[in-house]
Amino acid sequence: MTEDTVENAAQNLSPKKHLVILVHGIRDIARWKSEVAAPLRKAGFAVEPTNYGRMNLIEFLLPISYFRRQAIDDVWIQIQHAIRRHPGKRVSIIAHSFGTYIVATLLKRQFNLQLCRVIFCGSVVQSKFPFEQIDDRYEGSIVNEVGTADPWPALAESVTTGYGSAGTYGFERPGVRDRYYNGAGHGYFLNAKFCEDRWVKVLESEDKENVEDGDVPAESPPLWVRLISIFKIKYILLAAIAIALAMYVIGLLKPPPPPPPPPQVGFEIFNQDRVVDLSDWKPVPDEALSLPTSKTIWHDRLKLKRLRDDIRTFAMRRAVTGDVKPEFSSSTHRLTVRDASERPLIQWRPINRLYDVLIDVSNEPVGEWFDVKVDSVYWNVFLTPESQWIGIPVQFPTQSIRLEVRSSSRAFGSFQRAAYPRSETPENHLVNEPTAEKSADGHSIVWNIDKPSQNWVYRLAWEW
Image 1: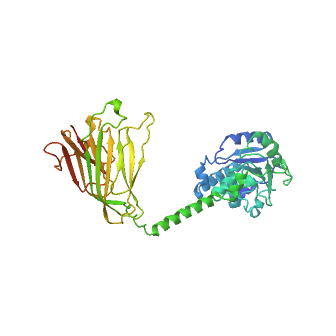
Image 2: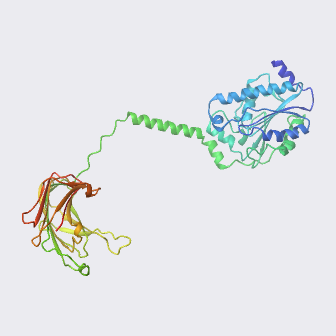
Image 3: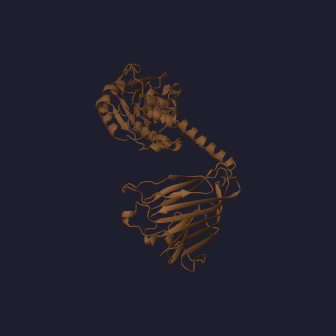
């Protein structure tokens, strides 16, 4: 088709009836066009639809021209075809949503396109569109139907580039007749009744500037729609990306932080001896568990030094199964005892009673070795024959430890040793090295450990 052919096809050969071309939005391909076409045909207009396919939301929002240009080219080919099929008739266009963007672009690009009336609804054309440059390509003013509750044009303008919000706010400029409809959404206009009441009158009128008003006064769009029009989402996203990139680049340029200092240790232990005297131990009947019946004496001897001035207390935690409260004393330092037991949810008393023995070492000079002696008396312990054992948890760097059990009243049988991390159990960590021995008379067992591992437990178990 030549340019002259298109121009001649749009000439006013019939004073009233003419061809109306429908251009849909991105997701309303068929239904509304058939609804709108019926009253138009009833009024004597020829109607031709166009179809550029269903454009998904991503294609619609992407700020690249490929998908938009493809739709524009498809519609232009179909418009030319429709005009050829109706020679000699005036041509008007009704466009919705993205269809308004297509028609506005064609009016700007195709110099040989001559139209009678142009009707937009749900328009995503920018309010600054240069109608003054193309107002010789259509008759009268463009009719722009505006839904005051339609957020989609404003959202399209806020999220991406190239679109505007004329379908939400109107164009408000010469050459366009904005008609506002309070509470109207994006698809409010796409039905037979609205077409019959509004669009047929516009298309039939010979007075191109005499157009009925919409709702007066017009309501404002919802607050959130106005906010996204002020604070554009695309600029917020760009700012966030720019800040993230800047922080990433700064992070690359910034030298890596120095490694954290190793955790400070409060004490270093040269040696720790634990001697448990079972000479007064004896089985305890159930009815005597709450009485001081079976006596066990523990002697702890330590040589240690304080490494930090802010560390003023050396703590030893003791766990016992007896009901009678143990007794703690020291011939070298002042000490206090704190009950750290937690009662279980079911039993009326805890299985193990925990005591924190707090030894005041504030008068000891930092960095110098000193001796600590703690003596403890436990009542009614070691009551389960198959689980009689003592142990030392190594909390601080330690040069050596010594474990001894003794009894002047009875001899020990076999014994077993285990060394294991505190988070594990002793069964898989038995020790077989000849670092422990039982006395010739069987009344004592001694185990010496050099350079024990920190955060390990060293356990000595025996049978009578």
